[in-house]
Length: 105
Image (cartoon, rainbow, N blue to C red; front, side):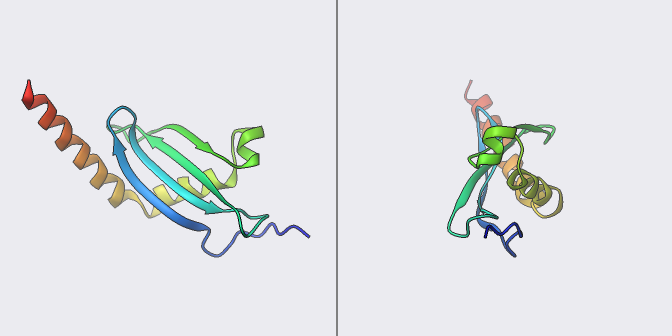
């Protein structure tokens, strides 16, 4: 029988970082609802100035066929509720790096 219950803590790894060419990346390994031994790599890209969602992806079957899944929803919810401070820190680091690069000129 396949379980469809969400695990108590489905997030196995969570990273927030900045990539100069893309923006602020929020990535996580999120446990599958149907297979306990499987995690899915889920990635959201936020615009570094507006913090709007620019791109997203997940390696699960649901995303592959429908381009949306509960892993993305879980990560989006975490951004709204728990990750604002970490995202703002990455944004500040990005702004400092860009200021440094501009001063080289």
